Length: 287
Image 1 (cartoon, rainbow, N blue to C red):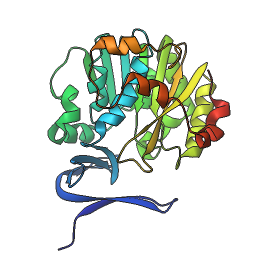
Image 2 (cartoon, one colour):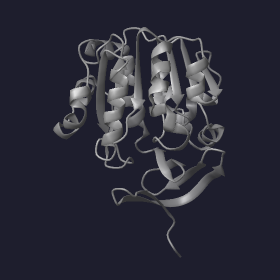
Image 3 (cartoon, rainbow, N blue to C red):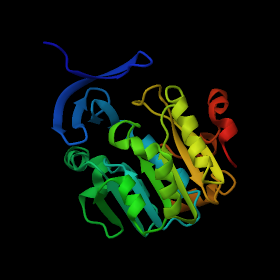
Image 4 (cartoon, rainbow, N blue to C red):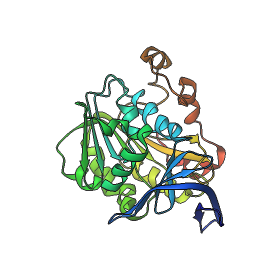
């Protein structure tokens, strides 16, 4: 009997990663993509969009720690947070752990992602599974929402998929102009920033776009198990607060929050980029 597996392949770089599957728990096709939750042999349950790995139970905490906590511990008082994407719920879960957050709005374009994760990935979907007065979920196009909303936010988190299909506009100039307008006068935005190995051109483009708008533009890195190359990035752009100069390790320790990946030392280390990445984007970073 042939072994079942999912293979994520990067055609441009002739690179692939294969995961053995024990069971397919959920599989439906929306107007945007195929959405699946599978049980794997080595990484627990895994969310796939069009056969690309979004999260796995084994390492989702790394991604969600790093897309949330460096930003929310940089801003001195993050009360209003907007999440664009993030349909698995893990980003909202981490945002709502911060007691300063009074309102967290989340905008996800694909309702099937939410349906799948609510049923089969409760470890990330906990924020979406029970009513919470601080949390509001909108099934909508994030680009349209940011363009049309009158709300103002202290932090915007763009938890998007790769820049293909419905996520493509989330990497564009017009979108970030609208994000800038929706941010408070001291607001900041952190965004899924792709691989410094395989997406160097995209990272350079993002830094340029953000640099046209924000006085502070940085990149941070982390490592995980399931994204191509293992090393991954988020972009960070701020109107006022600097992720190193305005960061206080004592504030993290005083929060009494427990993390599985994030630490005060990682906050500083994550923004220290390797030489090859600095060659690509370093001249466009802004302090």
